[in-house]
Image (spheres, rainbow, N blue to C red):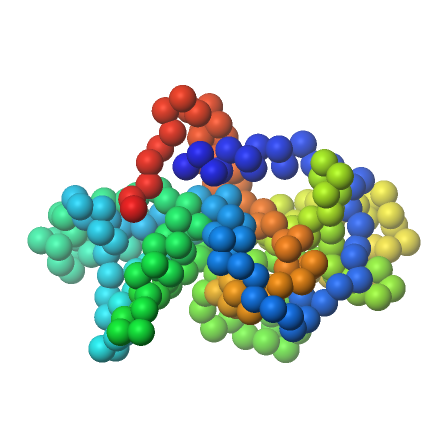
Length: 251
């Protein structure tokens, strides 16, 4: 999990660095290179269930498609494993919860997908974030239909997307946790009260964002950075503290 260590630099960000950049989330362009998608996703720790050979627990969608669940929180993974122990104890005994970066499991899925088979990822959200996202979706005339909700903010007279200056770089943060983006925006509203009425939070789904990254290569797509949840940040901090003995991920 060495690739998680770089996220430590974001811990010192302050709300005064926020501004709104007039760009469109869905502007069509060329595909972002796969290695760039992997690099973006690599900063996010997730969980999967693996057997003694580090093969992920999977299922079959059709003759050519198998899938595995990718959990955004350890609690979600523990719940599925507990249910499996009740329903299929012989199978459950072969599996354990494994930490792996989102980029690593995404890359594994890409490498195992070809013309004869497809290895799909089913992203399992933290249920608390599902409940937080539902009213936001409803206010925009949408409904929650599954998947991992992410949060992004708009503001200003042109309803542009929130961006942050970090080390001379302009990034567009997309948040895994509503309370994190809300806290940052609350602080910003205190500093820029004239903009407060224009600011709103929107929800995008993780699978849709990844699909957009795979299909678009523009300045905004390149500026996107995924902002971990509090639990994810705790894992990143632990990774920083144990740099001399980094946690390995299944290959």
